[in-house]
Amino acid sequence: MNVLLMAYGTPYTPEEIEPYYTDIRRGRRPSEELLKELSERYAAIGKSPLNEITLAQALRLQALLNLEAPSYPKRLLGPFPPRTPQGPARVYVGTKHWHPSIGEAVAAMHEDRVRRAVAIVAAPHYSLRSVAEYQEKVEAALKALPEPIDFVWVESYEAHPGLIAAYARRLEEAIWRLKDPKRAAYVFTAHSIPVAAVERGDPYPRQVERTAELIAKRLSLPRFQVAYQSAGRTPEPWLGPDINELLRNLREEGFEEVVVQAVGFPADHLEVFYDLDIEAQATAKELGLRLLRARSLNADLDYIQVLKDLVEAAWLK
Ligand code: FEC
Image 1 (cartoon, helix red, strand yellow):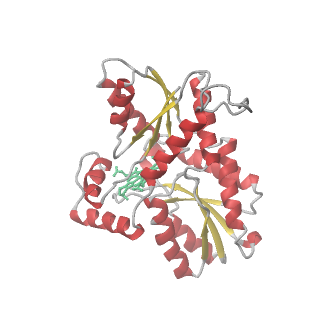
Image 2: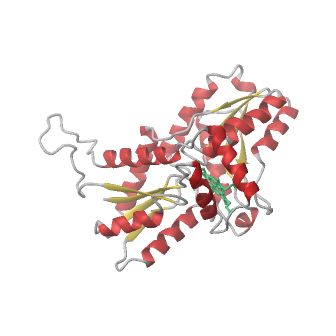
Image 3: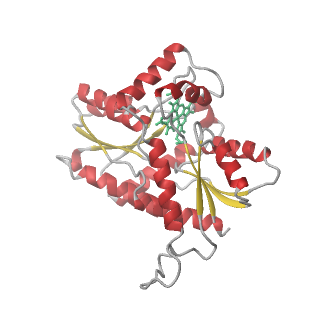
């Protein structure tokens, strides 16, 4: 079984911020002002752990796929780790905007004579501005190869029961720290996308709402809202409400405590550590609102189990 696990990617060093940002902007170099602003955000969090987390997810997914869990032998009769019936699983990592890039990963798969693989993004919701762009990058990489690779896509998994349970578990931990859970506000966030994509029929907001509804139902939350974060620094309108704007409204409505859970990203990175832990926290503090953030899924085994289920189901298609 072969898997291409994809994520956004992040620069490894401050010098790499400029080419990384240029790639996000489809080859247009950012102005000095934009570059300075982004560099300051990275400096404020020390370093984004996204590449390390993505690699850990891939290693654990590969290990899990290579274990025959249900019939795991009590005595070791064969090779360790036991192989899946389809043969050893290999998980390749490709990032959307840095290295290893999606193109580099697809080229490595071709060198290893991979003919069929499952493609999955470490982000649960489909968007024209996320998964569709990962798909374009895979298509472009395939064009450069002499033989095709047949990719079976997992396009979204916003309602996977294991994902909902994993998010609910982290949210519950935050709820334990609340002074009064019945009177608190609960906000689920995802990365904003341009409104233009939503107008073209992007299912993204519906899928984000669905994840939020299912987590809220599982924990019988008294109320919940969805907000968007990290809108791009471009003049076009971005999908809202913005998390900071929502925090202001919540305070005006009299809320004193709020739990925020980022459901659009499984991993910690710049947008979690800066946009939520620094920026949204500063807004909350200024408003006199107590903000708790539910911890991320990262490379924890419950999330990796979700990826394993999805990948195995896609492989059998
Ligand atoms: O830790 C890190 O260094 C990387 C954090 C990171 C993640 C991430 C995920 C998503 N994005 C999505 C949409 C857009 C759109 C644009 C855009 C721009 C940026 C910039 C940075 C950035 N994003 Fe991001 N995103 C992360 C980081 N993103 C940095 C550029 C500076 C800025 O605007 O803040 C606009 C692109 C353009 O200009 O055309 C659109 C979506 C996701 C969630 C799905 C996924 O993970 O792929 C959607 C992580």
